[in-house]
Amino acid sequence: MKKQKILIAVHESLVPPDSLVGHDQRQIDEWRTEYDVVSYLKNAGHDVRCIGLLDSLTELRTTIQEWRPHVVFNLLEEFDGIAQYDQHVVAFLELLHQPYTGCNPRGLMLSRDKVLSKQLLAYHRIPTPQFAVFRRGKRLQLPSRLRYPLFVKSATDDASLGIAQASICADPQSLKERISFVHEQTQSDALVEEYIEGREIYVGVLGNDRLTTLPVWEMNFGSLAEGQAPIATRKVKWDRRYIAHHGISTAAATDLPDAVMAQIRRLTKRIYRALHLTGYARMDFRLRNDGAIFVLEANANPNLAEGEDLARSAQSAGMSYDDLLARILSLGIGYQAAWRSNEG
Image (cartoon, rainbow, N blue to C red; front, side, top):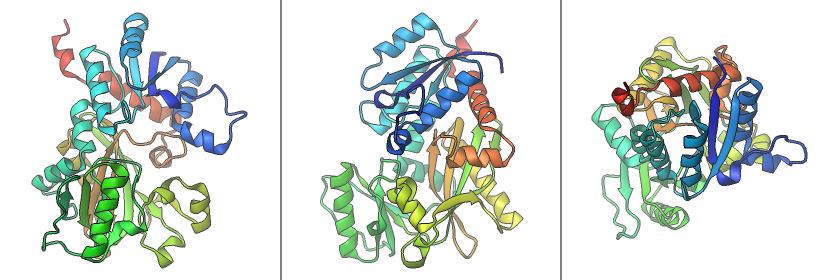
């Protein structure tokens, strides 16, 4: 790829330093993705600037108008502290006729809204656990049709916020308590869905129109699976000591029949298109012991750190981290946003 002027948009608190020297592991973990992307793009010879955003788009607009980057590399996961508002930043970039990486506004809106995305997937007959929504601030009344065990999580938050072993409920009393906990802890509606026991599967996908699925990836819960439910809690995802203690890891899925692999890839592409995703994403599945596959979530713009699942699965397919970032840049620059139809 020829050298580009790249503006990297990050949260104000996650603007990375020029070097890792002098920073402890906890600090590095906070802005690891931002550091990796900035460093690799600079080393590739691109002209890179990083801009930190919090609750104003004035500096973003000024920088784009004055510097005129070829592309904005979007690493935002929220705006003004609200996860669902990242779609509006991307919509703002489209209004400026500015190419950007990652997902388009409609895909972000549909995938970030977990309830709406599940409704869309059900409409397309894509298997997803049965679910119910309990609105924050409304009188809590449990429908009789719920089948235990049930899994409770925020209807809007990501990164496993509010998810713990207590998220699995075996009776109405524990379910009521957990719904109330989610309402208070996350200040959001609670999404309750049928708990699917089985293998935790992830699949990365790249593309706008023509899609490429990355190797099927799997989480190994190590010793955690011996006495607790194997679920991706916040500790499982982010607590280094907890991960090391239980021997939790992720790697390419093994011993899956070819037919199951093919079905997972087909479902991944169907989900991607049903939710109007572009750029890159990761699909989370549960594979039950009887071979049934259920999609748990579709994650637009997933973690891009070099050591995270998307990059590692790409590497296992022969795509280096440099290649992955270049592919994401190319997809962003080539995305046919609506404003392009008015270009002369």
